Structure formats: C-alpha cells, structure tokens
Length: 115
Length: 110
Image (cartoon, rainbow over the protein chains, first blue to last red):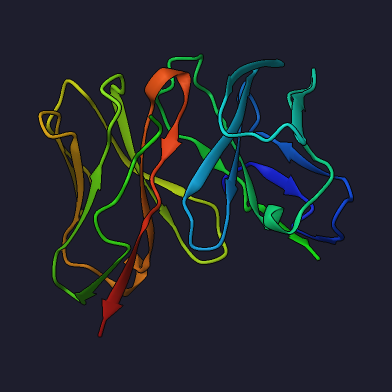
C-alpha cells in the first residue's frame, strides 16, 4: 500500500459526460501528479500541483482540469468525454519540495471507460 | 521534446538469468532518472534511481547504468524471478516535469 488513495477505482460513463477523479496523497506529501495510461501505452504526464499551486503542465487537454485543495487532496475533472479518453488515470504524490527528484508514490489508479 | 523511449516493448527471459532493460532519453536537461515497476492491476512502484553525476548505482538484485554521452539508461535485474514479471518504465525529470517512457514488458520463462 503506497498510502495514496484514488477514487473511484472504476467508472463507466457515456460520451459527452463529465467526471471527477479524486486523489488523497500520502500524509505529508505536498506534491501531486496526474498521469494518464492508455492500453499498452506509457504514462502520459498531465499536470502537477505543489501545495495547492499548479507547478507543471504536460499534455493535458483543455477539456481536462485539475486542482489541489488546502487539505492537499486533488481532483482531476474530465469533461465532454470522448471514447479516446478511456484510460487508467493515476495520481502520485511526492514529498519533494520541487527539485523533481525522489520517489513518486502511485495510487492504484482510476479506470475510466467511456462508451 | 518529451521522449523517453524504450528499445524493446517485450523482453522474455529464462528464470534465473539476468535481465537487461534499456531506455533511451532525449532531454539533456534531465539530471535524475528513475526506474519503476508496474505489476498487473497496480500502480507503478519505485525500483531504483540515479543522478546524472553517477554512471552506476546498485540496489538489491538491480543495477542501473547511465551513459550520458549516448543518452542511454539500463536496468539490470540479477537472477530473474517469476515475481519480476511486470512492465518496467524509465523516467526522467526535464524542465520541471517527470516524464515516463512507454515501458518494457518483462516476461519470465519457466
């Protein structure tokens, strides 16, 4: 158990809908990362937050947004869903203070299926 | 660009043999590299890391080699066991991000 909690574990929805994925980082970790993993693909970096502020952005679509709340949990919002958005979405946390080194602790992922 | 790639998508190794998983990276700005292991149905788990001021680092049954001249990273697993069966990702940290490669699936032959 990494200490990172993601909910829901599975989600099935229809095209055009909106979903919210939630992540609770390990206790004390200030950094939260979101990654998307499609079938047989690597981990695509979406976005990173540090202590409530956006720190880095990757290949995140405009239909997607995220935030990190004062209690450090984070949410990833996916809207106007398309079939191609079906994937595993991972959250990871890190105690790193911003030098982008050190271990990332990953949750078990949220599997999104868009029908 | 963001291109941490892998030479082979699947690697089959006899149980007990050594495994070598390779990774090419393209960002000269990266100064830290990590290997992660992802078992089926789980999130990636940290295996070993190396900073750019080193060319080799050893852990328990694993060794990471870094060749900055050719931007190449490798993970060596000694005496491969069935429990090593997983997808292995290398990652780097260019420009304030942590970028993962596509992964290599390690298949253990009995």
